[in-house]
Amino acid sequence: MSQLCNVIESILFISGNAVEISLLAEKLEVSEKEVRNAAEILKERYSGDNGIHLLMFNKKLQFASNPNNAKQVEAVLNSIRERELTNAMLETLAIIAYKQPVTRLEIEEVRGVDCTYSVQNLTKLGMIEAVGRKETIGKPILFATTDEFLKRFSLSQVSDLPDYEVFVQRLKDIFDERASGVVVEKPMFDNSQAEDLPEFLQGENVQVVE
Image 1 (spheres, one colour):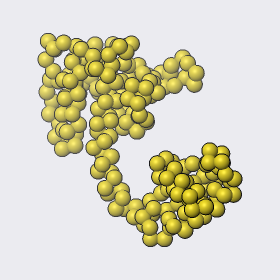
Image 2 (tube, one colour):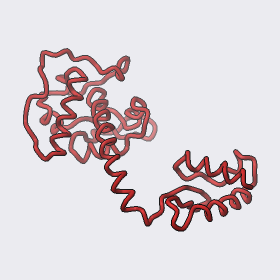
Image 3 (cartoon, one colour):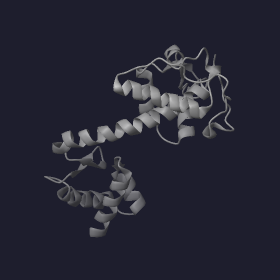
Image 4 (cartoon, one colour):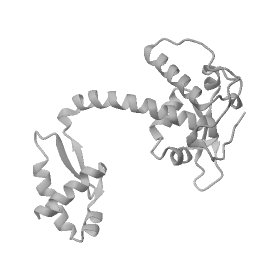
């Protein structure tokens, strides 16, 4: 039982998400009762004043932080997320700008990570918007840049997009301005620069919507 507890502990730690008891039992070749018994032992270990608690719900197990520490955890993680989300939003916006109209799943195929939060934030900032649905299974929403995007980057049309590196640098400047509360209107780039695609889009079928 001790070994089973250790194995389940490792799985839950690495997963970070809820794991079904039935899946644990199947893959570890033990009974669901044994998994539940091991979970009860772990629950005693991860409870009370411990920073980590074990949750048991809907026939699933998951590690979670102690709710008493929520304020301190939020203060630290929000700062980290803000930095990470800024970088994530920059890359997500670049992909949308060069490949629009594009679905969230297509963006994720390029980035290799979930982009839900970035898409939501970019929509709130008015940089992108839903422009329709793709005629495929599930009819996923198609996203494209907005007039606000063109205005903020001094673009007449999407086809005027510059070299990728110049584009990303101007994106960083814009987000820095927003963070500081000071917005300075200035040309985004020299139109004479080559309009090369970024390396991560090389070989992609890029659609430009004017």
